[in-house]
Image 1: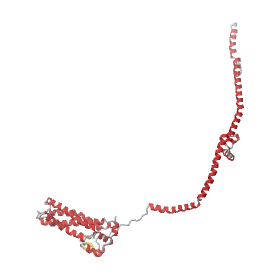
Image 2 (image 1 turned 120 degrees about the horizontal axis):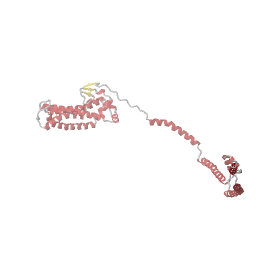
Image 3 (image 1 turned 120 degrees about the vertical axis):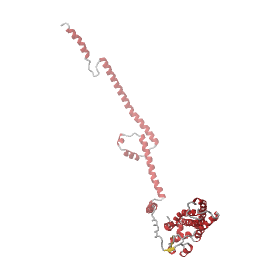
Image 4 (image 1 turned 90 degrees about the vertical axis):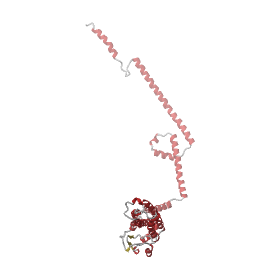
Length: 366
């Protein structure tokens, strides 16, 4: 909302456009009174000239002084700078253009009312053609007044805030000469209205965040400068990298040697009892072997292990053969002697063989 929109006189005169339909209806009733005495062009010319000419001249030469109501007007000396800036816009070229457009529109409307006038002949309260034309001309004058003034007010309301503030206040000594001031001049008509409060400038969250980030950025910059001072130069960095790379390469070579020895040489029982860390430490102390020597040592150790295993395998095979022969001999002895596997003789056949002899010995006594 623009600051000058709070002026009550602007809105009062803008609301005057509501009276336009009333005056148009009165004009229609005046044109409907009596029978035509003159040609239509003459009658319409009379009404148009009486209704348009005074208001057109007023708005073109001395625009309407809006700081007035009915027959009362505020003294020019009581106007504020803002109100005098408004008067500056009523004298602009845009208002003059509207002053020309408004009568043309009203003339077109007047012609339409003249054609519709016979329809209102039965309801018009006026009698006689001359009285009717005079009433129509006065009503048409009111139509121009309540259209021209609101249009000029609209032009002021549409002014931009920057343009309005840049306008110079109208000189006090020329207000009475350049504007139409009607009625009794007084110091005040309406109570003063306080201007709207100015918007309070509130810092945006982004601006606040940037303000908070500034000390942090400064602290980071100082830390970066300190770190840059402690960081070594390019030559020192290269030397340190080379020094770190050589032990790493030696460690890789040692690890590969440990892996080869672990795969080739058998691990003694005493070494199995040692921890992995001790074994790795011991292997690291040994020099890196030659691959050819490692292969020769591997071949010799394999042949020695085969020679050590061969007598044991022969002794085991001899023991198995002896055990098998003993088992076969026992089985043959069991079959020939008809004995149980545990070595006891079978007594059941003798019992069965003695039973018939006992029976035969009992028969003679019977």
